[in-house]
Image 1 (cartoon, rainbow, N blue to C red):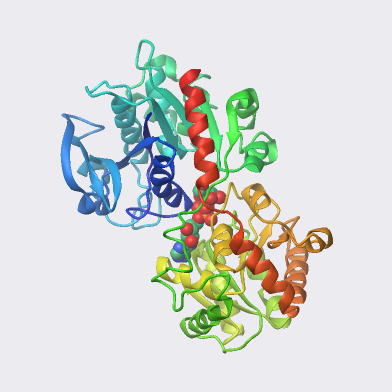
Image 2 (tube, rainbow, N blue to C red):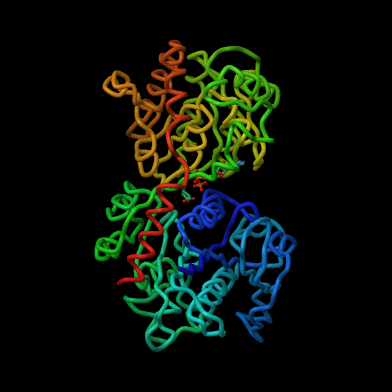
Length: 479
Ligand code: ADP
Ligand code: GLC
């Protein structure tokens, strides 16, 4: 079975969040299921720089405003097709934002090009064998099923649209429609039209053969007005083809027993060695050393992640005797609130504003907890890294957080199955109460150790979910 995945990020080439972790890990995980997966990605500078042994599959005289080539090759261990289109992708920095922090003004064309190229390759329009399945990730690839559907005539390829976050939809004014190269009838209820605008994700959800999202809870949630962000009606109508498959982690990249990015490697059996990482975190974050509870955060600092509420809870966290190491970047107001808290509590609150892959590993390896107080969370990966590294997740009861962490309530503690703490609703009193619960558990080190070991022993790898994806692909082929 040949699968072409289309995505705007892939670890370790380009990453702004969990999407990259997932698209980067799936090829190897699916290979073990007998699935051959090739990923088509925009030719951003780091992609082009890493590309080796590239063969030209096709040359476009004009792909959304300039010449482009599709280059098939390997990059940092991944099999990819890079879209070499300098007029669209040869720009420094973040894949979506210009240096002013705003979306690139031509994002509609930049990601329509990704989808167009993906559809052309998958339908064998450019020659070659095409693909059996075209697997599209998020709004940036969501026009691909639309191109397939409106390409004229029946197509062999089946399409799967995976939603990693329904908050990001790729909405543009109707005026962009003319530049997309779609027939007029695609600007309609069963195409890309959305309240008079163009919505890429809506187009993908309306036209894909199957829809998936990244946890079973989120699959339910996005069918409700509260979480569906306007697309819940369409999703309810397509419920029969919607499913939720929880993400796994790349357990080679994230392995505490063999991680060059942490101060001291360890396993569940050699857990006391983990303390060396706590010392290293204290040093890196200018924290007073100590044996007390040390919370960790690795997150986008956004409303989605509940980081405004968390910032407001920091004084209580400190009053309860705990410390915090936080690495993140995001909304200016939240960054300011967190910096101000760090200023108020020098030595107790350590903050690094920015993005640092290595430091994110150290936080997971050295902190006692990992905090994820999200208002909504399609899956979440940091709590999975926490489970693997023995930093106990404290999470909101929503989406994939709900599906991957077992709350330390009395029943779960008695049955010895708890792996973390869940809370709802996401508000300051409930978060503060949960921080208190965690502090009480931490005081009982035998209990805490037990939870750490259970988390570390739980299977957060891709094995199960990769087989679910493979099954879904097979069902699609039969459909
Ligand atoms: P999302 O994709 O919504 O941001 P996930 O939990 O799925 O949330 O994935 C976030 C990914 O980004 C994880 O791999 C996490 O370690 C990483 N990450 C987030 N913020 C930072 C940061 N400031 N520095 C390094 N890695 C980060
Ligand atoms: C999105 C979601 C996150 C999920 C990730 C990978 O960024 O916000 O919850 O883990 O995609 O699927």
